[in-house]
Image (tube, rainbow, N blue to C red; front, top):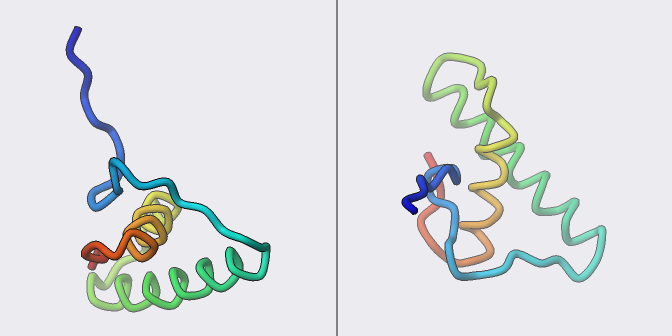
Length: 69
């Protein structure tokens, strides 16, 4: 059986994303929000898929991999 990977571009495949506190998660969400605002400025459009973008950003940031643009 073949499956298609439906994770957002840049999502890590082998590293769990964890936070030790709500403050750590809050900080990650704030950093993602700031970066996403810059992303929308670059593209010149609102991103209706912002939850996927945030998730990909946070996972990549924590894994130390390339962040989405």
